[in-house]
Image (tube, rainbow, N blue to C red; front, side):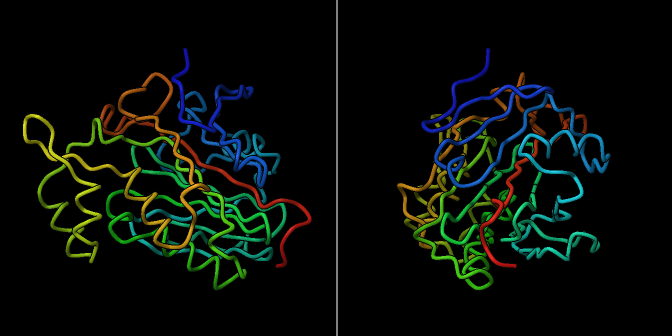
Length: 262
């Protein structure tokens, strides 16, 4: 039985298995968060696997743009003529080229998808703790505004499955790193908490949602799947559970046809 996601999210059946979608985002751009049943492996470049994944959002694999994820805050801008270019390092990718699909992969880190109904611009973001500390989602909103004239208040955002605060025990050095990155004491108090045993937990869902709000995205346009990868390993991939044997889940979004200017 599939786990129940947060409000606005629902599972759909693809030929390869279940895929998670966000209804408010679905009205703007085709997208999905894959499950472990896709069989995507770390550093998987197999055209057949990615063709299956991208077909779920109505695109051909030849129109897929990705980044080589490095746990930072660099944003790749993709235009129609860029698809044959070498894949750069980065943790976010944006486009407004109609029919171009974007993807990031994760196995506990936070995948975030963004779409703008006004310009047709879309984004896929990978936010682990380092990327969250570096505010990769804020950098993505800034890049979409600069490159495509997006207004942050019109964006729709979906935060997909990742490790939840229920299971994300971290060391004191992460709290120090977030403070050193300039995050306020108010935010840190919301993102970090101690359990009954005094162990420190980090809430990456809350952190990325708050950072999107700080970037100008209305709270009402933010949607959180609320599914912990470590808790639901029967359908989601978790590095904390499986280590090097863990597969990857893809967060994929396609820029709508007939929208945006390249």
